[in-house]
Image (tube, rainbow, N blue to C red):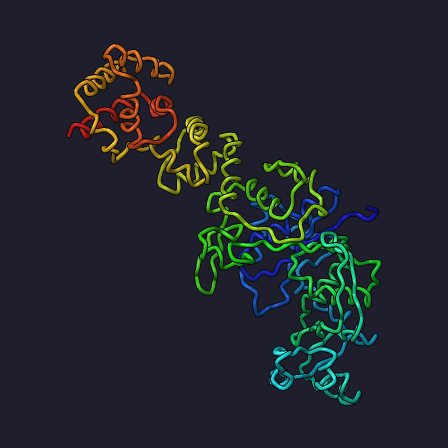
Length: 508
């Protein structure tokens, strides 16, 4: 590649960042880093009616959490700014005027009522939703049908108008997609898209072409839902800048849920996250939980997203970000939809939690515990706890249930697991164990285990028969890591207190 690779992600600040959007970011990011290029974040805020306060900052927060921060953006700046489309309004007007001058676009003065009438008048069984296309434009109120002097008067009187592209009637527009190969469109079935709206803002169609040109974008990766718009964009490139300057295109496959395309509303329906981070709708106050708040590690999140539509040709499933950068190839992205499997997503997170050192997980676990009212004062002890329980955690949020007994004595016991087999011999065993523990100055797990087994043998009891009651005394149930590890961490005094308290419950 002779030119420096420059790719972009251009979201609209209208709500939560769907995992499909983050996957688009990820593929752009991996491609840019692999080829020592730049990843640009451009905010497409031209639809002011759908603009949501706070949504832009939310996008930045999501990308920061996922470790996919851009090289250029409204925040970082760069030599191709501004990076918000609302701040580039005059730039688009110039190019729209150029298209009209060259005969590739026209002013359309139709009112909303006239457009509605058109849709009713031209509706047929074969064409239930008529579009403003080459067959309709000659019957509408625009600069192609009105005399030139009337068009001048309307413009001088500040009559509301939009600017539409003048699609050729019978032209085949083709391009080579990096994922799908050769793709062709017949312009006869494409309508005259609005390029500049009545409020002076560009639509996506004009803005994306102008911005990609001015920002020197070399590769444009986006969702396959944009495929039908591609002939419009290709013609705009041809009319304004020449096809030789056009980026290479790749249209990414949809992410599928249990019933077709995975939408933003599916999270509530199926009980799993679809947003990178939690999003609160400012209008309704409705909270949608994100992967971060659910307890996913960012490494697991980007790992599972990378494999939703791509693989490196091997059986490998766990990839670090550096490995993804090294192995990623856009040509190995599938053209068919990729099904999101939440159980598999949980597996990725579990694997990543297991692989992480305790020190890496410490701040997350400490924040979790603090949020639940548990004061964690000793990082060394916390690291030991994390190392003991992390293999049992699917989510970061699981650390609370898997380790709360290190910080709090159990309030209830699984008596059904103890009482049916409880007898005087076991009662005496634990009385002797307490005396041994009180005299014991070596409080290491292996010493405690040896003492435990020796006392059991001396009392002609199988260690297994008293291990479960001992565990229930310390944690309340049949769960947790090695019971002697638990005793070592909670300490001598607390262990003895818990045994005595439990004995009362077992015999009460």
